[in-house]
Amino acid sequence: MTALIGRDELKAAIDAGTVTVVDALGGEYYAKQHLPGAVPLVAADVDAQAPALLPDRAAAIVTYCSNPACANSGQVADRLTALGYTDVRKYREGIEDWVAAGLPTESA
Image (cartoon, rainbow, N blue to C red; front, side):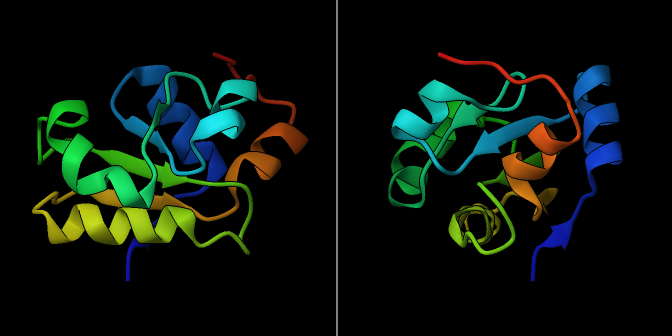
């Protein structure tokens, strides 16, 4: 089970530049709106793209998708952990919670 991170802690980590945020929705969802600095990585692409996108397996990584009902972030987090990443957490509430709190997003 992937450890969780809350919105306030995630925002502080993004602001401090101490975390890599992974958008597990990808595609047009990522292009339309994503958390600041997030990189797109969907479950089907983790094995092929993670080594280039996330070269430091000890770095802090947080995955997210749309909301608690979305399984994408958990799937990506689980695969990253299986590949040897040691500090992976999931923002279960997702981008819907982030936007509802009035926090900034980016678009591609």
